Amino acid sequence: MKILPSIFRRFVLAVALLLAAPAFAQGAKSELLLYCGITMVRPMTEIAQAFEKRENVRINIAQGGSEDLFQSARKSAAGDWYLPGEPSYYQKHLKEGLFGEHVTVGFNQMALMVQKGNPKSVRPDPKELLRKDLIAIIGNAESGSVGQEAKTILDGMGIYPKVIKQAAFLAPDSRSLVHAIKKGEGDITMNWRAVGFFPDNASKIDVIDLDPKLAKPQALLLIQLKSSKHVALAKRFMSYAAGDEGQAIFRKHGFLDNKAVK
Image (cartoon, one colour):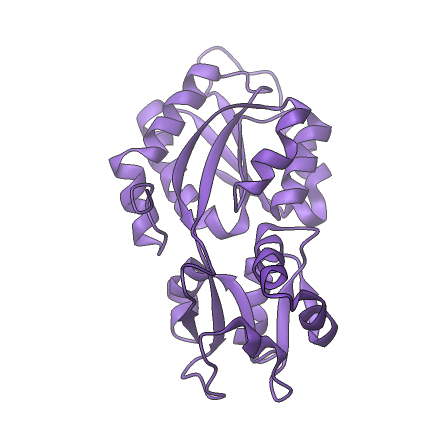
C-alpha cells in the first residue's frame, strides 16, 4: 500500500502517479485509490492493509483536507472512495454527481486540545479560545473538516468572528493543529478528539472533552465514487471497513464506532 503526498499541497502528483501507471499485466494486482481525510488515515491504513491481504489488491491512499480531496477527485475523475471528516461534504457535493453508495465507518467528535498537564487550566468551554492569556489556533474552514466543524460550533455560539480575529493562525488540517500544540506554537485549539489519543500525541497533549450537545458526533461516511473501475471490490472494502474487524480498528485508534450513535 502507498500513502500518497498531501492533496492540499500536491494532489496533481497523486493523480499523475495513478494515471501514468503502466497497464496491468495479466494477473497483476488491481489498484484502487482512497481519498482520505487526514484524521482517519491511521485506521484506514490498517484496514486497507488487512483488505489487501484478503483480496490480493493494492490500495493507494491520498490524504489531505476534506474539501481539497473532493476537488482532486472531481478534477481527476479517478479513484474509488472518498472519506471526508464530516457528513456536510456529502451533502454539499452530492448534486455534482460523483457519489455512489456510502457506509458509516465511525464518528468524529470535536474537543479542545492543550499541552500536556493543561498548564493554563483550560476549561471545557470553546469560549476559552477567546482568553487573552492563551495563544489560540483554529482550523481553516475552507480546506478541511476540522475547520468547518469548528466554524459550525463557534457560529452556533456567536463567537466565530471573534475567535478568527484573535487566533494566531489558521491551520489546514487536524495534523497541523496538533503539531502546533506539541511544538508550543499555541496553548489551545479545537480538533477532532481521536487525534489526541494517537500514541505519538497522547504523551504530549491533553484532550478536553466538550458537551456532546455542543460538539455533536459527526458520521464518517465512506463514499464509493462513480469513477471506480472496480465496483465489486470497492463494495467489499466498504463492507469490511463497516464490519466487525474494521470497527475494532476504528475503536483502537480512538474513534467512536458506527454503533456508538443512534
